[in-house]
Image 1 (cartoon, rainbow, N blue to C red):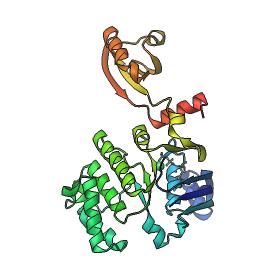
Image 2 (cartoon, rainbow, N blue to C red; image 1 turned 135 degrees about the horizontal axis):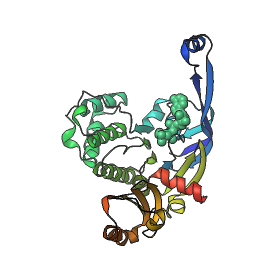
Image 3 (cartoon, rainbow, N blue to C red; image 1 turned 180 degrees about the horizontal axis):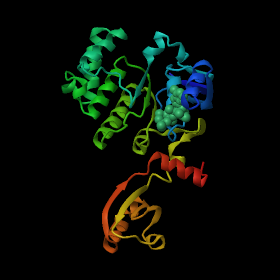
Image 4 (cartoon, rainbow, N blue to C red; image 1 turned 180 degrees about the vertical axis):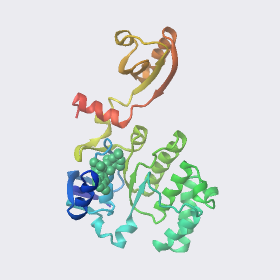
Length: 325
Ligand SMILES: Nc1ncnc2c1ncn2[C@@H]1O[C@H](COP(=O)(O)OP(=O)(O)OP(=O)(O)O)[C@@H](O)[C@H]1O
Ligand SMILES: [Mg+2]
């Protein structure tokens, strides 16, 4: 099931309205539109069984692309072929083979137990009863939510809800999976569980997965290859290692100091990324982390300290700054 994308583009027409009542009236009779080129001329091929990370800053065009690939919206230009199908025709055979999961949108019905929504999906996709049961058992075990299926969705935790969404999206055994921020807003444990599940699922069924995430850890755990999109254009398609290896061993150390200290003095402790009053962020290599923190705690008056991974946006920002593509 390969995914072939050729010169794909999407331009949205957005109505623009002048302010005031006059503007509203003239808008009503004579609409003006502004064009937004969300995706411009992108091409790539994904082979069956690959997991590819789709990266880009906010508004880069990731969701728009995924919507075109899954047939939710029409492309303005170019074409998409998935196992020979054109997504926006939404032929039943195409829908059987693909699934789109959006972290910020839910398909399960809020007041119903997950199981009821799953039964509806089973009927929509015409899954035979025996296969439905098998699939349900297998997936709910892999996701460890067997005991939550009879609870109304609104009573599930965020992580459990995402697992239930994945279960619903995978019930019909799609071979191609589009995931738009499947770990959005989840706590660390739930993020790890979803990540682990996707890894197992891909290995067990050799499904093809295209995934966006704002968490670098998702991408490093799952994807060997990444596509990098910037202002609608594809600017990198290749090994994750090649562009990100330089950044993945780094951690951010965020320190809140009791008093302001000069940038010069702070530079003694490590690479200062930002200073905002008494809040300082250092970028530190993993291997120097402990020594550096000990040094800071020893020599400076610290109110608070925590360690984070650089976000994908920050890493992309670094790549542009250092022109390292
Ligand atoms: N339905 C729409 N109508 C008009 N413009 C849109 C629509 N959907 C997206 N856009 C615009 O298209 C551009 C790309 O948006 P898109 O949602 O694809 O970005 P994204 O990479 O998914 O960003 P994020 O990381 O924030 O989810 C943005 O400028 C956005 O404002
Ligand atoms: Mg998006």
